Length: 121
Image: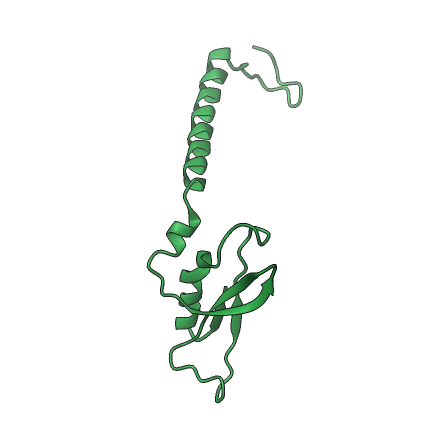
C-alpha cells in the first residue's frame, strides 16, 4: 500500500467503481433539485397572488399617448386622512411599463392595508 506523501501514513486509492457510484448519487440529487426548481419557477405568480383579493380604489395618475396610467390604492379600514396620517408602501411590478399588471400585488397590498398601512400598486 502506498504512503501518503504529506504525512507518511498508508492509504488506499479509491476504486473507479467507488467514485462513479458517488458521482451517480450526486448527479441524481442535482437532477432532482434542477427539476424541482424548473417546476416551481413555471408557476404563474399573478395567479397565485391575486386570487380572490379585493380590489383597491383605482386612481389615474397620468395620461400618456391616449392611455390612462392607473394605480390601485388600498386604505386601512375606517381610514380618515384628514385626522390621522399613516405610513404607506408602494409596490412596483416589473415589465418596463409594457408587461405585468398592477393586479400582481393586489393580495399583498390588501394584506398591508389590514395591518394599518396605505398600500398602492
